Image 1 (cartoon, one colour):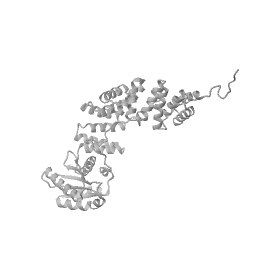
Image 2: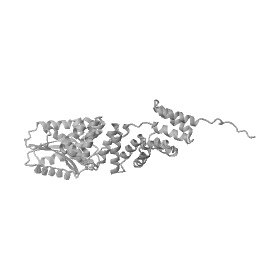
Image 3: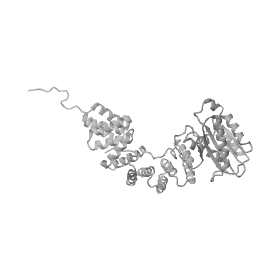
Image 4: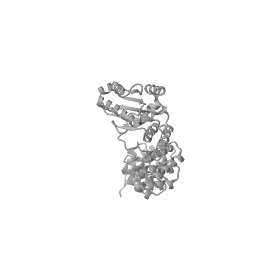
Amino acid sequence: MIPRFTSKEFTFLKPDSDDHPIQEPDTFFSDLVHTKTVSFAAFEERLASARIPKTGFVCAAIQVDRAASEQTREKARDIFEACFHSVLDKKRGIWESLNPTAFVLVFWDYDNRKKAMDLLESLKNKISQALAAELTVGVAWFPFHDFLCSQVFANALKAIDHAAFFGPGHMKHFDGISLNISGDRLYHLGQYGAAIREYEKGLLLEPGNINLMNSLGVCFGVTGDLEKARQSFTDALEINPREIMVIYNLGLVHQILENTDKAVFFLQKAHGIDKHVFEVELLLGHLLFKAGKCDQALPHLETASRLNPESGLAFRTLGEIFLDRQEMEKAGVAFNSAVKLKPADGIALSGYALAMARRNRNLKIALTFAKKSVALEPENTIFQERLEQVRQLTKPSQNHGRTKKFA
């Protein structure tokens, strides 16, 4: 018998964001949509009561580079106000301070979007030059698709989060990627229902966006709606049959559903495309191991342990294979690596104890580890059986402690 590994030890693959950004921002302005600070609520109310022509308006969120000096940050509000009124008047726009270095504005009464962008670029340049600092800008328009007037402010905040991934000086317009990033933020906060709604809105803007499809599938997967997850990954795969992230996730869905043959099929497909993806090698090796195909599993698990030396699961599964093959020295090395990574890993402790005892090495430690594994999981019959084996192997021989007589 071998210990049972659970699907919880494997996770869906999800990119951190789209468009290969530089780094994740320290602050997400889209959080304001959910927490609604005083400044957020004040501007929302002003926007709702403003007399804006039916032709529409543009909303922009602007952040002064956080690396700017304290002196620059202290004068940011005054500079923003002066520059805003040098480009626009009170009849054409409104603005509000979100924090000492971040602002939001709305303006209207422009002939076309190009002229509106010219005004916005002029304002951005004036502020940047006056402060001698880079600005990050997120832009949202009304009308835009089927978004309500009241949603544009939130869209601008999502757009500035999008721009912030690329660093100071960048400007991004609200789009499907902005919604992907917003959904990812909600996902990491554990707000899966809200994240699903963001991904679905993003797909309305960009129906063929694989990252959005994959992200939606991941959300369905972690919430247990596996059929919807499978469908999302399948749809994404139809667009790009060689997208490893999606192929792996589809394999993981089938593994959770206990469709092992289908899971192995997709994982072998992913392996055929790229043999150096840790998650693929680990899960494929794990499934082949569970199916009793240890010789096939071994190279995948060895690759996984090289790709990620911090994976206790890779090492302890290798240990189980070597234990089964009676290769006790290799089993001990693998289990030792797993225990070092996670000292409370019952499976690794139990296997390591048996490997040491069978080699007649470190018998006191072997017995301690075997007892500890049972203490961690008292109902685990495999751990109990191994503890008994270790006890038998560590019992003193009948001649222990006697003096041998010579004739």
